[in-house]
Amino acid sequence: EDIDIFCEKYKIFLYYDVYVQKFIECDGYERKIYVIGNEVFGIKRENPIYIYLREKPEKIDVDLIKREKFNINEDIITLAKILSQELKVKIFGFDLIQPINHEKYYLIDLNDFSGFRGLKDIGNVFQNFIKEYISSL
Image (cartoon, rainbow, N blue to C red; front, side):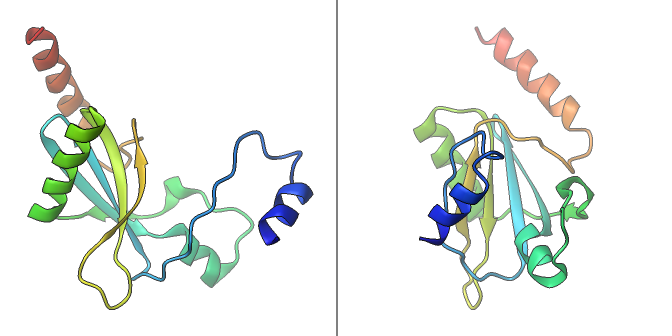
């Protein structure tokens, strides 16, 4: 019912479909995992939802949220390989959160072409991937 009210109230601003996820209380961070071919990278940033809950800003510019390198473990590499194989994608990204009192991560989002923000020299990785891909044709 709340969602229907929201959509009706803001319908002039909604130029796209709306989907709703259950809120999962987590440690307050998102782990953004990026995959290019066989290479897997990760960054960690504060979850914008937690910024909103804490500060109640009118707008959150996610580009301004500090990002730091996140070390990828074997479970995440395995997940990346499974997603790549099953979805038949070589360049993509996905987001993980770590629920309170859990050691494992939850997959909450998947993008078939992510922004790759926060990764230094990612252009070189793309360039090498594209060169290798073209030469394999």
